[in-house]
Amino acid sequence: MKLNPAIIRIKNLRLRTYIGIKQDEIENKQDVLINVTIHYQAEQATNTDDMQDALNYRTITKRIIDLVENNRFSLLEKLTSDILAIAAEHPWVIRAEAEVDKPHALRFADSVSLCLSCSKL
Image 1 (cartoon, rainbow, N blue to C red):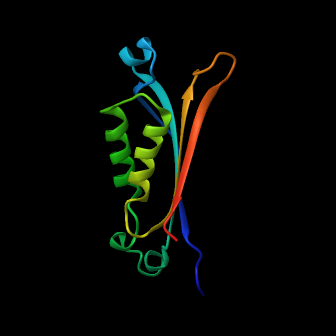
Image 2 (spheres, helix red, strand yellow):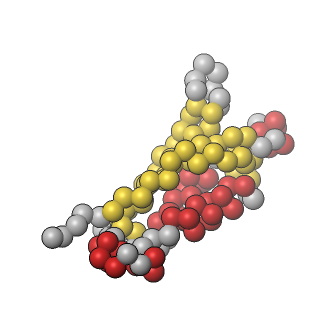
Image 3 (spheres, rainbow, N blue to C red):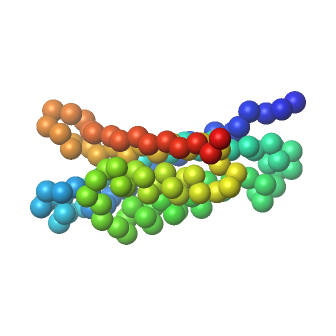
């Protein structure tokens, strides 16, 4: 049986970073909500049950946390692109998607989000 690619979803990763162009956004960290989806061929991992044959989502998440919490961003586009680059970096990744929500970015809206994706096929 040929398996379709596995899908790893990192859901609602809540972090704080400097994001924005207004003075108060430059001076104060804000909440961001991150969702990442990674598609990869996991057939080897399903056959062996060996961590060496699987994509380590913990390592990916730690790298995303380090990026977000230790940098400053003017644009959601740049932050989302950098997160996507980490998600798609491993050679086993076929497709990846990253979405970053910035809560309360607009009056009367819960949040503003930006989503980017890439494919290696």
